[in-house]
Image 1 (cartoon, rainbow, N blue to C red):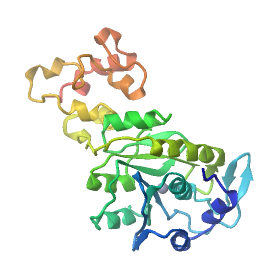
Image 2 (image 1 turned 30 degrees about the horizontal axis):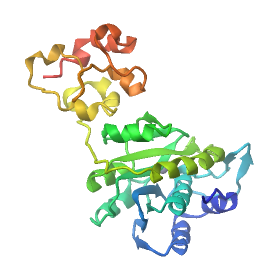
Image 3 (image 1 turned 90 degrees about the vertical axis):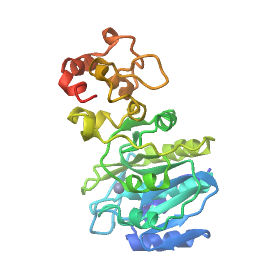
Image 4 (image 1 turned 180 degrees about the vertical axis):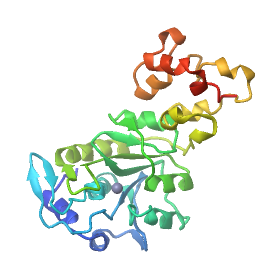
Length: 307
Ligand SMILES: [Zn+2]
C-alpha cells in the first residue's frame, strides 16, 4: 500500500494549476490530456475525480505544521489539492481511473469539457474527493439508495451540497456518484486547514471501498424539489428515500392522508429518521419521531402537494 509522503504532498500544494498538470503528466504513462482535464486510465471499475485549481491567488510558499494540521499564510489550497493527492495514491493502490479537472472553482469548466468528449471508461460509480470535513458524503441530485447505503458502510455520513464536478459528469455518464470529504476545512479563506491524519486514514478507507466488488450503481435522478414539495423538502428530498418515493401514485386522491411508503416495503418510514439513519421503520404515526410529528401536523407543508 502506497502511503502518504509529506514531502510529495507539500510539493503538490506549492504548484500552480498549470505546474501541477505538467507534473501529473510526468507521473503517468497511460493518460489523455486535453484543455480542461487530465484523465488517467485505470483497471478497477471506479473513477476518482479531483480538481487542480484552487481559489487562492498567491502560490503557497510557507506551510505551517502543528499536530497534524497544516495551514499557510497564502491559503493552503487543500481544496482541492487534498483530493488530487488522495486520487494519486488511490490510483497506485487500487488501479482506479482518475480524472483531474481544471477550473472547478470558476464554474466546473474542466468537467464540462470532459463530458463533451462523450467517451468514458466503463465504471460502476464515481468518487469525487472535494468536500470539506473528514466524514461527509454528498450525492447532489443522485438518489440511488443502494449506493448511499454502500458508501455509508464505510462510516461516511450523508450531507448536502449545491453543485460540484460530479453534478455535471454523473448524469452524462449514467453512473452514481458521491463527493467525499477531502479533509480540508475553512476552504476559500486564508484560514484554510488540512487534517493530515484524516487524509492518511482515508487512503486506507477509500482504497478498501474501491477494492470491494460491486455491481453497477446507476445514476438515479432525484425529483426536482420545488415542483411538488415546499422548502422543507429541498434538503430532505435529496436523501435516500427520494428515488423510491418518486414512484408513489401522485394522482391518488387519498394521497393527502397517505403515509410515506417505500416501494417494495410494507412498512412506513419516518422521513427524518431514515435520513438520519436512526430508527428506520414506522408501524404508525405513534412511533414517529418528534420531528416527523411536527412536520405531519402541518399538512400543507408535508402532504398537500402530493396528488
Ligand atoms: Zn473544491
